[in-house]
Length: 187
Length: 130
Image (tube, rainbow over all chains, first blue to last red; front, side, top):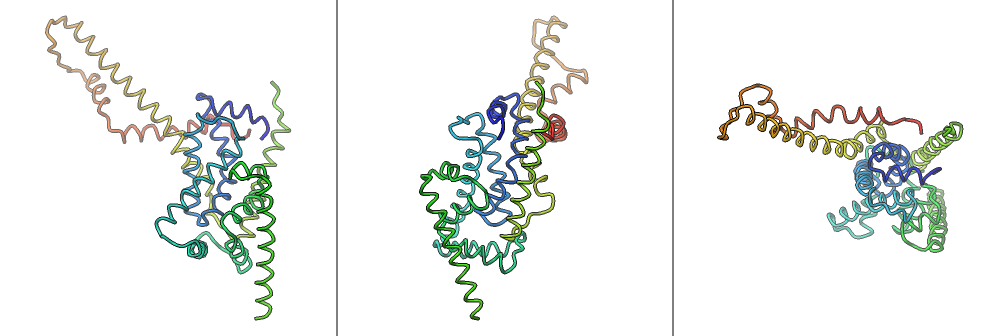
């Protein structure tokens, strides 16, 4: 963001904070929504997490130490809020990891705001075939257009490890899609 | 300071097209949908939960402080006017009754009053293009 320093100054100044917060909301609402949606899948959950994210951002602004960029800080809060919701669900249902992924797919298909055709469902299945870490990193890079360095800051994992995981995830998806397509041809 | 309008507009267009590209990617590739006007409604909800709530708290504090100050001033005046040595004070006039009753005003009534203008006030203050 251009003039980020000026913008942060406004966010930290109690007299200018509210106006700056509205701009922050305009800038980040949509991109954070999509980031969250892929993590929690259903629109309803994504909406809850988005609200919680901005409430937390608003409350935490006075304590923003600028140790990371505003961009990374916002994504990290959104990511943590999404993980908090997923953990809560995990504890509620006591599902195994495999069970949780099945449930993830069920949630997706039963969501009123999912309108995927066969191809889209196939891609969603291929994403769910990845481990949670691989999936999150792949999605953050491919769909959220985050830089490797930013993903590394958000997840607190070394940049090189992120790169390795991303390329490995991309290969796994490619392989999954190819295998499923071959199976379909055979049938 | 001269505003770099051209640059600002380019940036806004870039952000909008970037968001549109991102939305297309999620809708076309992953099959996600969102309700109509979702982002506008969600923005209003978030602002009501953050900025408006914060302002409301400040207004309620200010109202409470003003009401207490008014009652203290009223009592002080009443004592002085009557010049009584005893503290036997009766409050008869309507204005005083209103002031005192505002002290015990229901929070919901205060909320309703402040809610109505908070968001409007905020939108008025905020320039939509930055």
